[in-house]
Length: 172
Figure 1 (cartoon, one colour):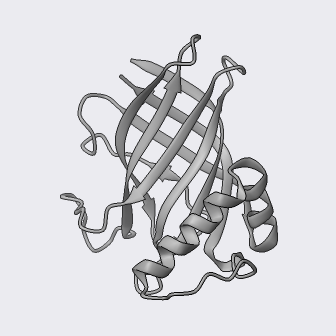
Figure 2 (figure 1 turned 60 degrees about the horizontal axis):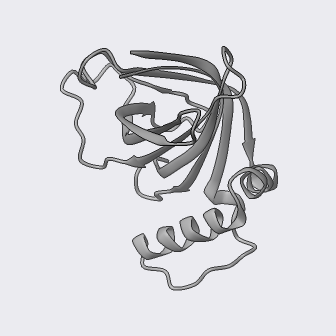
Figure 3 (figure 1 turned 45 degrees about the vertical axis):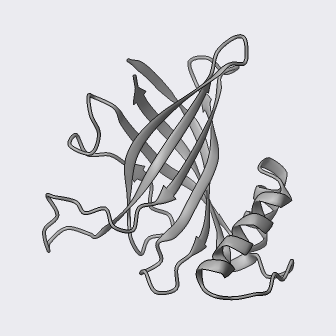
């Protein structure tokens, strides 16, 4: 089991207008605090039909993501690890976390937002760290989902939220 602690930036894209602010996907990077030269990729895609078997009405509703964590060895070979993670709905600054029953084994993830970017600052951050093509692709995907046929390069501000903070990951 690998235990990774460090700092992450997660960029959430394209909220669904009809889904209480759930974001379609997120992407980002993790920098290990124990080994600063270790960098991991992280990406998640919304799981719209995933149901929490332990959810009850007094709990905040969650949105679930199929999450892939990409690790690299010293020879730059990559390995993918997958988890189901959750996020509180209707809270753009919410972190990500797992419950013990979400994944097999003892795999887990905990991300706590400490810094939050929206609007132009979020868009500029994505362009610098993930590239402009990521914004364009996500905007086009969002438009396809919502049956829109146009892409406006200046209309990115409302579709991106960046969360930065501490992260803890346990993967096999």
